Image (cartoon, rainbow, N blue to C red; front, side, top):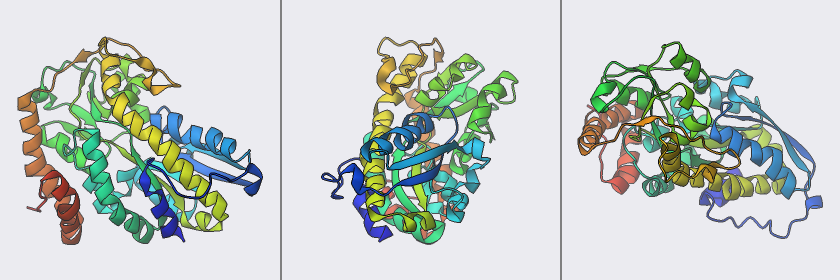
Length: 361
């Protein structure tokens, strides 16, 4: 039942044949869900997870399906613990950075190898070919019910120190949030530092870190613009988000509730996420550096902030550096962590789609 329902939801906002078009509000049993989202201030919590569970689901079910929302930091859950807490049923539904599951599912890094994907159309192709196997692994190894995925947006460098080019990142203490990202940053000569999203602003103020990586829209909306002085828009990752349910909680839900959650998670929430990645990545940069192309309302209901940070251009030579690190560091280290079976899967799906090969060294 769980796998069949999720297969219905693999459209990622492209349409779901779940038979809900004629459903009436009174057809739904009354259910109150406990949910945990990502950190406060992030677009994924404020613009997708919260509106889905506090507004959209109650609206389409006539108030029959309601929920509580707690942010990750409020729940006291650290990144690597997120999917274990979902397995234990601490809440009913969770939304978190997909790579938090890499301890249980090393192959999840296959869609987030640092420096691999530079645009949304390519990311769509990668997730499409990766999803069937990832779905199976979520169910069998992480022991959670996968509901949907979407990207936050291009993850770029925000720095509170002067920067002229990629070489200037050498020695800079840089906040990261995944193993692959840490390896990429280290290969640039920077020093990877792991701190929560919510601690980046005070961390920059106290000079604990020099730079930090997050989405151009996320950093702008979280007011990183008040402490950072420069942005360098090389895309390291996309911070793909996973929404999953506790298997135990999911199994107890009426099939009609399961279907409406899948429909809205894929047809409404994920669609917002993909739109955010497509539009807000560029506008997050443009608004942050006061480019005239900036449209602050692309992230509505929360508008982007127009500021005057310095844009450090990504040159052709910088892109050569990215590709060298991808081939010599990021892909080999991913392959070593992932193992032979996982690496073969990557090469046959993601690698074949992008024309790259992962091989442990």
